[in-house]
Length: 434
Image (cartoon, rainbow, N blue to C red):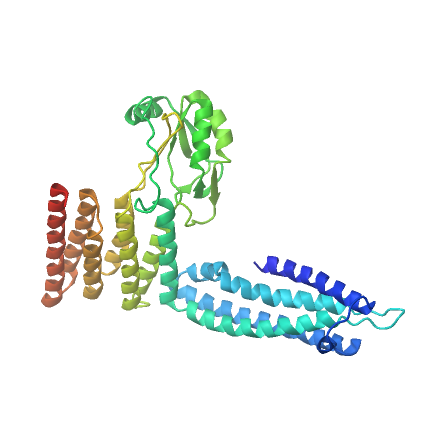
């Protein structure tokens, strides 16, 4: 964004300079209120604007990054990542730098001419207008950064990322158009897995790093062209080690050709991203929660906020249909098999570490149990409810071992019984269809 705004400033300078030159050669007349006087006064104005803008942007952003660094030491590095990604911060930096570049360009255009001093009246007026815009942007930036640095805002931002990642990876069947059915042609998935395990050839990873993106459509096309079956051993978010198996191909003769094309169908990097990896947002919320529960921080309310947003995210996932991890070509033949997204994996990642860090903390254990009851209302299968009940059982066991106060322990037991009652009600609904 800063680069785009600087380029726009350069284009603006070209336009205003052409108008100034036209006015200088008497091809047109500028309004009287645009005329800025002599070249010396315009030069002084532009020098002052350029110096002030570049000084302000350096001081403000240095202080801001220092504050973010101190905050990130307590709650993790996501604050710095969010600061860089934030469109408001990008636009602020871009407008300041663009104003500086524009002022310097206009300053350089003031030159002597056989007919006298050329004064870019319009360009200087535009520079003054940009200075007023910078003042407004500075006020906005101070308000914006003071708001965004607050931890509840950071948590809510990660929760919004989680919601977008869930919607992208697991579309809502109520709003998205249903996919046309594809005929089941060829061998069954168990047969193909047996062939891959016994006769398949591995495709090794060429670089180490986190798997950030997989082009599933590209892989299906590759497998169709080579008449092969690909089993992808890793999902986005997994860490790859160079030389270790990335995928397995059957028949083995197609492994070399698939391996050459495979490099264009996936992306690895030094860190995880939210693209195709909703669990990453869950892990971010969990990291904030367990940091808040550590003895060094001891911020229970931040942990409760994280649990609330985790509950909202898992409730959204519970109402969606998770993909089975089977991809077919247009003829219905299985071409790609990957490890399907596991509801148990996401639920366990959301609750296990928080539960372990909350040992002996009744308020957090009670909120965890309340969250499970809330998620239970959105669960769409008996398997999901079984996973949630297992978490409730572990929370109760944790409480019985670590909570000394009998009243607090009774509150947790009451909520556990409510969880069991909810699963019985949902079980009756499953059998009756109501």
